[in-house]
Length: 403
Image 1 (cartoon, rainbow, N blue to C red):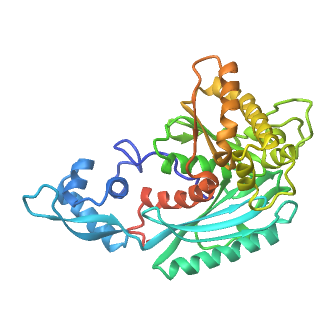
Image 2 (cartoon, helix red, strand yellow; image 1 turned 120 degrees about the vertical axis):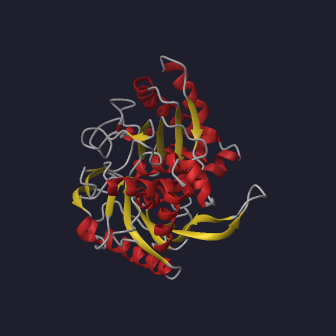
Image 3 (tube, rainbow, N blue to C red; image 1 turned 30 degrees about the vertical axis):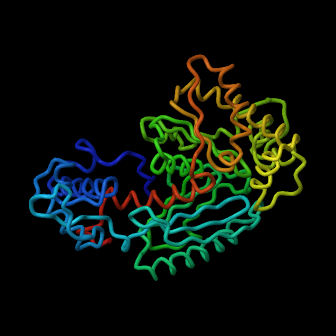
């Protein structure tokens, strides 16, 4: 069984493996990695001061991580101007890499991210996946995977795992798509179709988008509702820095919250779902936009910026529908913020006013803030890749030879 991405903040004194000698060592290796990732470059002495271990203990851990190719020394570091300089440590830009992939209704994407968080290789293919069987779609994704891995290996990287974002419900086994209405997939185990020989995690695209916001966002709080839109609308809830998954792992299906119970039929089988009023295709229809293409969001944003009345009305109504759907989540969970990602980020100037009005009208307590993701539509792909990187940081592959 594949492991779910670790949503927690860097390991602290009470986290990690059991307090056996081996468990303590693994936890301390992870603490060194996370500290250098968050604050580096740092000297060994600075790392020791940050995590509360002796310099000798940290030096031993650092030597192991350097031998494994996970850390590297950049040269002398003398911040105070006196005393013996130490070598500045940084995460290696070679070695393990996280491979993230995204299956969208109208595109496929794969990227490789190194331990420092830099995207080192990327491939995108715009293709209509709605109604296509999983086999051909995943064959195309595998071809993109091979292209990205070859490029990454040419730069001294090797894949540490593959994480795939999908627009649907994913079982607790982290590999089976239970239901993806906008693709037409049901009970599909992705593992047989994808490259084997490395850890695989499959998760909902909104979950990966929320994790990317948590890990990479600028000042993102630990309690927020993340909403993203492409063809459909996805939602994810983060509480105290962790995803709220629900009993079966299906929490966050905001796109299928009824806004008007007797409204148009949705691909999920229900009526009047939020997607029918605030999804990309719904907004395009309301705005009188021609058949969607890969630049549809940019076209809508450009028309809105130039004062197009039809587009602005369509986006206002979409914001109203979002506000109605989000009210229940805000009243129930009391998050610090609602974060708009995906296509919603680019269209936020014309969505947010009506969304905020609905929240102000309908929430019982003080209205939470509405923020716009700087990651935009890149969130799910980056979240997938970074989930693999964090797995390496959380359990550095030193003694096992997995580095």
